[in-house]
Length: 333
Image 1 (tube, helix red, strand yellow):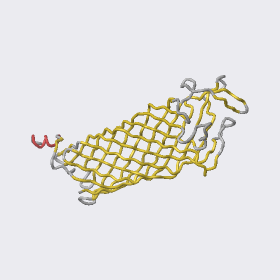
Image 2 (cartoon, rainbow, N blue to C red):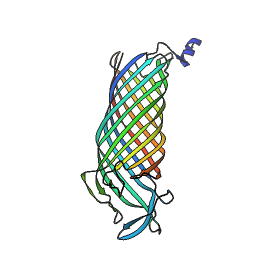
Image 3 (cartoon, one colour):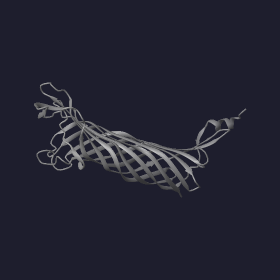
């Protein structure tokens, strides 16, 4: 039968100054094998304040407004191999965590869809253009700094002992992504697709998106066994977004004007999740493998068009998702 002291130690989580997560530096680097998706769309329908246009479908002219959504541009499977360096410093009641990353990649798909509604009601939210392009030369850059208050806990039972470090934190991040689409291939849709073709060697669109904002989260470390540690870094992000779209074949003053010629701005939120399993090679060197998932969404945004950018139309989507495998190493001193 357990005595009172053993029973209390079996169920109590208490702070411990002898916890395995000690003061000092951790520095390291990792490779992020990432794949992403970015999308933006907008509305210029009559209800959204758009203007009527004349368009010809199957040799018939119509007066029309944009549909809702009017246009959606989606970049999917955009690959980027990112090299990241990081440094963590703990001094008693303060843990500082900083990282910076940069990389590029090749491969992915861009789809551009457009809808309209004719004033005579013949077509209602009709997809009149649907094209595909290849993406390459994707660039990813980011940095972030978090400040946390580490709490060390030690759990002891008759059969095991386990250490935890739980660190609530607040921080700031900046994330940039540049995407480039080449060539135009219309998706077969009878006589309704009005887009022209362009060879894959022709760069048709460049998209540059910036996300920045506050991170509120928690960093958790726990020992799995004497050589393995599990680490989870989970943050809720409060974000501002600016998306600059450059339609490179429509830069004349009679169309959209100089690039960037479509700009979307907004704010929203997101989640940033890192999961790691660390193997302790010796007292100073660890190797790690993990997974990262970032999902940032501006659910309140507007879109303006060049060359005047005089009217802000409501956006229907503006988000970026990037995820993938992480492999790295860290050194403690």
